[in-house]
Length: 130
Image 1: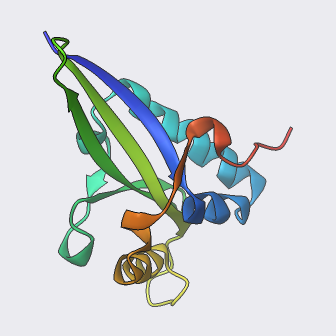
Image 2 (image 1 turned 90 degrees about the horizontal axis):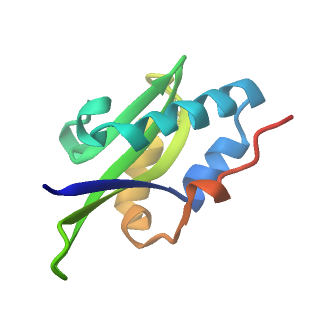
């Protein structure tokens, strides 16, 4: 049987987006992201299409956290699949606005920022307010 391990990472762009959100929204997104630790991240939330194909959208109120899923299979005799859920952007869904989170992700894709950007673990996400 294959063991699945899920790791959550946040890009610098996603952490910056989280830091700019209202505290209650930020806390809600971080809590909802933890759902992915115990589920199949490719089925937990909506897969995107068109130029954002291969990314997933996790909604929270009018806000979205956009993530990708990377599977790493180790071949050292162990059957381990590590699923890396990599949040690439967070922001408000505001259709028609240039500040819309989907427009931001398309811009990051054009710049190559999503692929090349350093990531950090869940624990390095912006702190939740007390």
